[in-house]
Image (cartoon, rainbow, N blue to C red; front, side, top):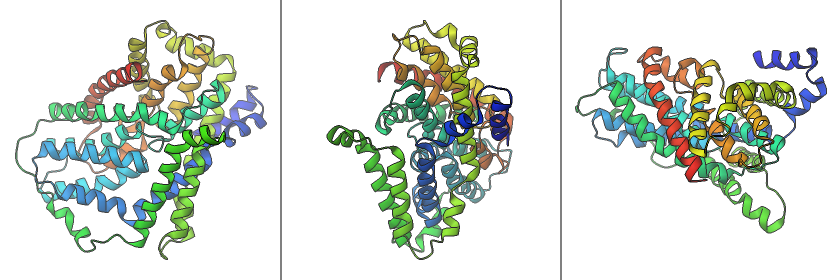
Length: 410
């Protein structure tokens, strides 16, 4: 609703005409990309493949609590890169709760319960910066770079920055959780979670269909640059996503119903993303973009690459606390940064924008900063204060990690 009100205010206040608002939001590659990704993500969840992988991973660990927390961070991170942070958290959080219940962990009073459930949020959020699939803010950043700065960032280019940043951030996240919530060395029972997959060891037709759709999609995404170089024809990201979604629908089991496919395409995400694109484009085209850029970021423009990247990431992580949507954060921050650096040809624009694009997904401090956080928070094992005190430390670590990767590995 807030997104739609913002779009209505643009023509009413004379910022841009309504036709421009509609064209800025609805044209482009994002909507079909999101549609295909949503269908495949729902397929992974609905077919049981994500649950099978998660339970199989968790139930094979005879570890103490500290290693279980690391395992769930890794699991959430990996799943998020494939199916998005919201779906990944929805898959692993119930498994983590079953582990806690199997070990008679008291809700709200156990450091192990606090650390494990926060890990179920942090893992997917950290993984969401790894690939454009992880968060819509990544795709929005790429769309703004293409439309406003004429800089095309491919799927592989994003991953070359996002995956190293995500992997390097896992260890600091783990150490911060252990520091804020000290644990003993008692072993944790995770075997109880294995019962649901022991009943069926072979992949179902629906699971094989998901595997085929994801493989096809990822091959197209990763090979898009080579295809363009060989043929001169650009392969948009949405093409791979739509083909993958169709493969799942056409080759899946008879249990797949079109009504369920329609439900997997979340209209609220579409509205938020398209409105964000409209608002971001309007900010960039108006003097408001330059004014905001100067207020927030002009002091760092003339710094060298490392401190500039560190402060950009840190500022966005702080600003992220005031938004309840990764999309909203990217829609406001990325256009004003493009406005700021537009005339500064000496600064590589992708290197300048990358820290902000990555940080737009890092809703790691406040529970209210991202819907993904509520999936674990509603279990009652940790408080807002628990996540905030650990998240503030992780924001510093994230700023360092992103600065290192975007400065020395781009």
